[in-house]
Length: 208
Picture (tube, helix red, strand yellow):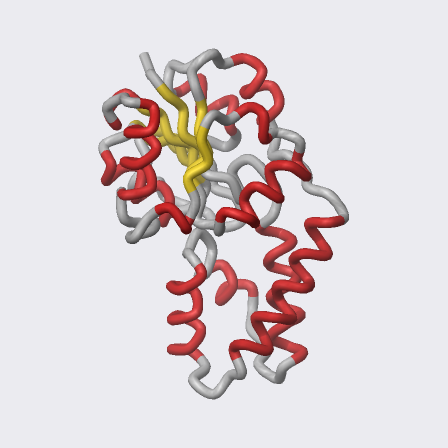
């Protein structure tokens, strides 16, 4: 049914969003601009340039470079302590036979580092990152690139995403989209299948 499987990374395969949330809350508070979880949830799935624009719009006088350094240091420390796979990841990766790629809004070095720490790097033929495209998610470009690397039509690809931004990218690329919301609930506007976990989503899409 599908020629290739394309996976978002953060919040879909590995539990990094909770680390990013805690580190971000601490960073904003430490620099005199406390924010709530709802504000942080609005940044989920966004690439870094887009996130910075949203932050600047909300707090024009923030020393964003200092906040960013604090946030990055806190996030890196959290990642170094280890990454937990999301429910069903190990079982799904061990079951499917289609070629697989990562399609992430993280930069190249960060994506490969997280894959290595999580112990799943070997499962993926390609890793498409923010550094590989001009227009990041929610533009379809990252998923179109991943499909082209396999030499298959996007319509023959199954996408797994957690965020609205990522699901929109996959949908606009013409892929079938399974969305498994992580920290932010979703009505599944861009999803063909809205699921509580990866294995359920894979079954809904007819993959397993």
